[in-house]
Image (cartoon, rainbow, N blue to C red; front, top):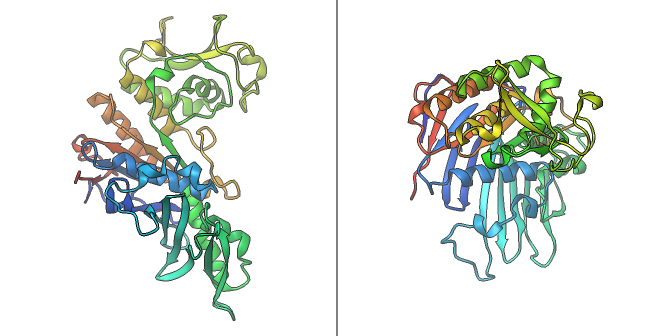
Length: 407
């Protein structure tokens, strides 16, 4: 059940985006259809499936980027509904899907995965407007391939051929479809829209314990646990002063005490961890970076000569700080795999935030949600966050709440 607290979200038809997640049979969820707007909160008690829904979205994003099934589902048995009974061949599995909207109109993707006795795709369907553009099925369990048929709309209405059973077929269509006929071009447009909508996703769940430690100066790309936040700050503070000023303002609104700046500084301790990647982040002078044997740590500049190391901050402050940084950066800073062949202006970053409100006090929740709403309104970023109770978000413009109930 959805509970929109504002008028319909602004549409950006030139930017492909995922507008619906379907979990027909996945972990503890069955026949679940989750509408996704620009800022969506999945709300429900522990065990209602919020984390499972985010995990399914992340897996689809990985598959859309060309990952193999084993990478997208490292623990496939945990994805199978607990009470699912094996068939005569001892097979059990799960089914997930999504809808991507954009210039090609709504495009649906549905995938059936066999988890036991071995992991493989057993069926995939890509459709738009009731027209099946791609359909695959496992015809011969003894072969490591599925039989695929894709729309042609030429003298031969359908083209058939084998596809690997450990990869999603949709991202492979540009390698198989020539694009000579209107039907073929329609298939390519739908497949590209789905892949672009899926790929630019960043799963984020900040881990305060890791954020308190010094980190090696590396690539400057933020990881999902945000443990290398100090390294990312070293880069972003030098690259974009305007965006960094916005970040400092957000931190000032959510952290205790005065905040004049948020910065990273070299660690002079001889016991600092070694640098894993010695290359300088883009836009940062090599001479301005820490020595190759040093590391960096982050701190709040209080403006009166005092700097508070992040190790002194509470879990709520650290999670708030990390999530604010995620919302104010983009694919070039976050550890995501966007479609490199598509201009950034035509892509939408989706942040998947598990435990969005975990350890946050009421002020931090309010400030973070306000920041998320402002960033999502621009259209280049979307947020799907999991919370136990969304009552505190009531009345916030641009927020849609989807309630999950524990069976």
